[in-house]
Amino acid sequence: MKKIELIKAYVEGDTIHYQVREDAGLGLLKKEIVDLFIRYHGDSNYDCDLSKVHRSILLTPISLYMLPITYFFNDVELVIPEMDKVLYGQLPTIYEAYSKIYGPFKKDWRGKVTVQKVVENTPVENAKYDKVVFFSGGVDACHAGINNPGKKSLLVSIPDIERDAVSEGPLREEKYSLIKNFSKVVDSDWLLILNNFNTSLFNEKVIYNCLSFEIGLCSDAYKYDGWGGIRYLANMCCVAPVAYLTSIRSLVMGSAFEQIEDKLQNNYDGASPELSDTIGFCDTTFAEQDALTVRRTQKVLNIINWCKSKNTTTKIWVCFSNDSVQCGLCVKCLRTQLNILCAGENPKEWGFENFSEKKFSLYVKAYKYNESNPCWIWDNIDTIQDDRTYPYCDELLHWLKSIGYKEYHQRAVEKARPTLMKRLLAFGQYSHYLKVIISKLTGRK
Image 1 (spheres, helix red, strand yellow):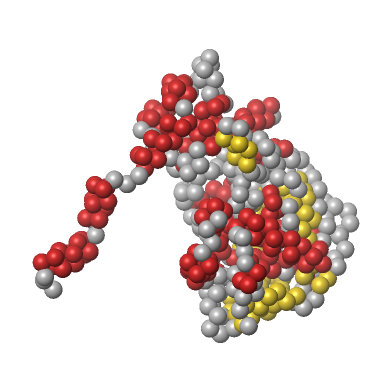
Image 2 (cartoon, rainbow, N blue to C red; image 1 turned 135 degrees about the horizontal axis):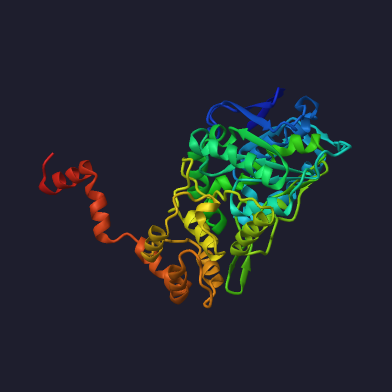
C-alpha cells in the first residue's frame, strides 16, 4: 500500500503552510512533494493569531480535502499526524453520506486512513462571533447574509472553492470588492480566505479517468460537479482555524433549493445538506442551510425588499466570466435577471450593468436561455402574474407565461442541439483533419 502523507504544517503570519508527499510512482498528486497554503485576509476588526490554533485544528482543512482520495483508491494509505476527536468520530458518517450522494461506493474501493494522534480540543471561551456566513455574491449567499446580519456574524468568502475560479484578473478583484461592500449592507465583519488546494494538489486527469472510466461513477451528482464537487465542502472548512479561535459554533451556507411544480428537492451535489450535516470539528457544525425550502424567485424578492427597507442596494453576482462586469448572457445571468424582472426591478440596479430590455427580450425569445434543469424556468414563469403590468420587459414576461415552461424548455434544448450542418461547419475549421481524410479517400500520402 502506497502512502500520501501530510508531512509539514506551520503558521507564518496570516498564512498556514502545508506540505504533502506521496510515494514514488503513485501519481495521484501533481508532484511527489506539494506545497500548499491557506491565507486569511480580514477587515480592520480581524485580529486572529493563527499561532494559537492547536495543530489538529490547523490540519482540519487539508485533512478533509484529502480524505476523498481514500474512497476510491484501495492501494492508498492517507497518513495524517493529528485530527480533532469530533471530526475523527464523524469519518464513517461522512463516508456514508458521500456514498449516498455520489455513489454508491463499493467497500473494496476503499483505501486506508491512518490518524497518528486523535486530540480532544476544548472550545475557546468568550466567543467573538456566533456564526460564519459563507458569501460568494450569488442569490443563495446574499439571502443567507440578510437572514444573518450583524456584528455577531462573520462574512466569509473563499473564491478558490468555485469550479471555474481564477487566481487573478478582474473577476478576482470583483470578488474582493463584493464581500467588502456586502459587509456594509449587513453590518458584519468580513474575512477573505485564499488557498491553492484546487490548483496545486491533485493530478486531476488521472483521478478523473479513474472515477469516470475505471470505476464508472455515474450518479447525477457526479455528472453534475464531479471530483471537484466531492471536495467542495472540505474546501469551505478552510475557515476551521478561525472558527476555533473565535469560538464560532455555527457555519451557515445558502441552500440551492429546487422546485418544479409540486416536486421539492434540495441540491443533490457537493453542497447537499445531507453532506454538510455530517461535518463537524471541536464545537463547530454546519447549521441547517439557509432558506432550505424557499424558491429562488422568492429569495431574490426577499433580498430586494430587505435592501429597500435599509435604503440600500447590493450587487447579485452569479457570472463566472473573468471580467469586472457580468456577461448577462450565460445561463446563471439569464436566470437571475429574470428573477429580478419578475420582482418588478431593473437588473441594472442589482449588478447587471450590461442589461438592455431590447437585447435581453430578443435573446430570450430566440430560445437561447437553455437550462439543464427546467426547474429554474418553471420557477420564473410560475411567478409571473397575468394581471400585472411589469415596469421592465412586461411584454417578454407575459409572452413567457403564454408559452409555458415545458414548451420553452423543449424549444431551447432543440435550439442548442447541434445540427448536422453545424457539425460540418465546425469540422471544416480543422483543415488539417480535412486534408487527412481527403488524402485517405484519394489514396494520396
